[in-house]
Image (tube, rainbow, N blue to C red):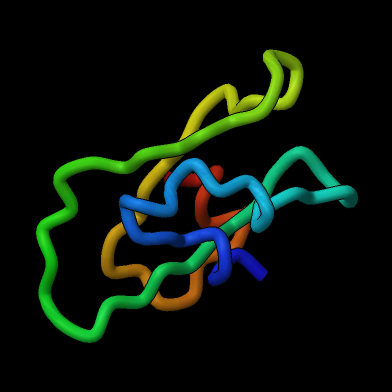
Length: 73
């Protein structure tokens, strides 16, 4: 679902691919890496004010995360 929205820096402003959910206000996006990484920043380009996330949570090294696990953390 969201794999096309992860872009190289030079394509970060391209709005042709975007992530949107119509079923709920929440989404879980899993980004697997092929090696050890140190995530230093996360760039999120959000829409108009009423369509922006209130919060973003990162759960490193969690294989099977669901909404119940995320809310309990």
